[in-house]
Image (cartoon, rainbow, N blue to C red; front, side, top):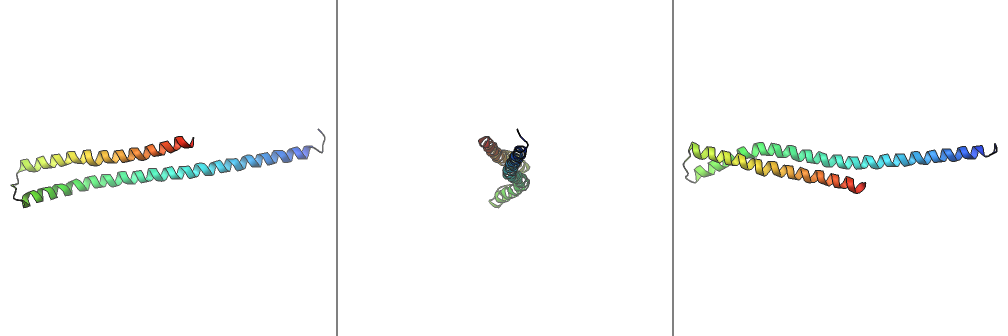
Amino acid sequence: MSYSESPRIIIIIIIIIIIIIIIIIIIIIIVTVLFRKESTLILYAGFIRGAALAFMIVFVNIVMVITITIFVANGGELSSKKVFTTISLLITLRLTSVHFLVQNILGIVEAQVAARRLQVN
């Protein structure tokens, strides 16, 4: 190897290093875009969870008042036994309908994120 070939080798090494840096930057950009998409899905799932919890707290109380009001408006006699039974049944419905529904929606969203991760790899 002569002295005149040395600058060519240095130029080739510099070009290889530049290509490697460009590939690394492209990979970082792709990972950032995918991470943003996943984080928005997880953020939406969090919004659904928060809205459902707020809905669960307010909705059951509204349904209790409406149910008892309609019962009394239709000529029913109000007793503590009927009121407490109605309240306990509505609380049970709240747990099964709202809570499990939200958990299922969140599970589906998280499964979609996991499936996309597996498809990318």
